[in-house]
Image (cartoon, rainbow, N blue to C red; front, side, top):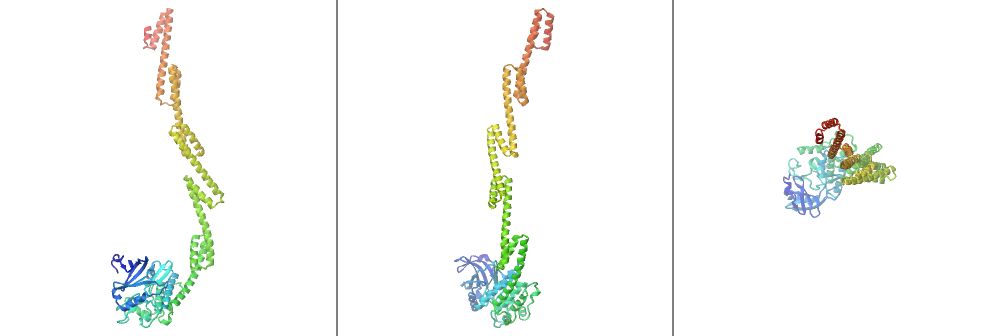
Length: 547
């Protein structure tokens, strides 16, 4: 194996730049490369130096360059020599070698397996008509692309030409072209052969594809395999398979016939028999699939029915019933899809309305109305959404203005605007909260104004010495806001002034009474009144002097 691939990548062979290694064998290496002139990916098969110097190898190598042009044969673009080594530039075939698909955990369906072998037969038939025999048909030389299913034969002419080693030699000095488990008996007998050797090898491939086993099992000693090919019958397919088309037994028997004359004469014959089996399989498959499609349709599993019907038409393009049913399914599916789209559109619109995203909701409802213009319920819902949007926008405008007035201290104006907003949406908790807060602030402000007014009047009454009236006003103000220090202060002043007036009036009365007693020479009575007055007002100097 190539040990250092990175050292090879980027190397140039003529006008081709190597981008990787596709495979390696005893004869040489197959590279992946790019044609630098055309930008096209290619495969370059380069012989080892020892083989390049052999005249027979060179002859066969150039013969490969003349591989026939056919859709199932890899195209050869160029042939040349680089540093003494022969190389062939071939089409780079997308896909995997058939041997990898055989061992894959995703094997091909039976129809596809038969289709691959049919395509191989088509390529071989064309090549045989041109006088070209492959001589090394095997899974590694068949590249399969699954999409679309295409098989291409590679390595025409010298697929695995080898100098015969001890374990594979037919004679001491002979050479063998091919891979032993796929070799036809006539090649092992070293007798003249024709294209039927490729038919035998294709039959081995078909057997391997169907059963996963070689008809003549490989062995570390090639002579054992040769002996099996020459003398032992292949095990019947029924040893490994159940429920398969019986015609395959007959096809395998004919393809693997040990005598050339008992074998298919041409690869086209082989392919035609396979095609007939494929047609029968397709017919049965189509009937089964169509029955499934009808069942799925009746169960309203329309997506699955749609897929199955498309597969039916792909296999049988002229299946009229399938086409009619597909048309019905397509229409019903389309209606369902439209109904689902409408349901989702309305659900999204409801969600948008619930989230107060009225512009989105209106857009969605507008789409719904355009899809179903005769639906009056949808139109009413659209109108209702527009009304909600108008209310929402109007409320937002009113609340914005109210906030501006509130900032400027106009609580009454702000409250009037919030009242209008509340009339548009009386259940709106946010508006009600703002309204209550504004009402509380407005009430407090009005209260403070009234207290201020009462304080002013109380001061006027005090100035006019109407202390009783002042005290009444101040007591009313105190009820409105007991925390007002100014009220308490003025109340103290008024009360003190009122007491002073009352005291002076009392003193004046005592003086008058005593003066009357003195005038009438009622001295004892005057003395008694003076003593009583001093007792009531012991600190009043004028009374003490009068006594």
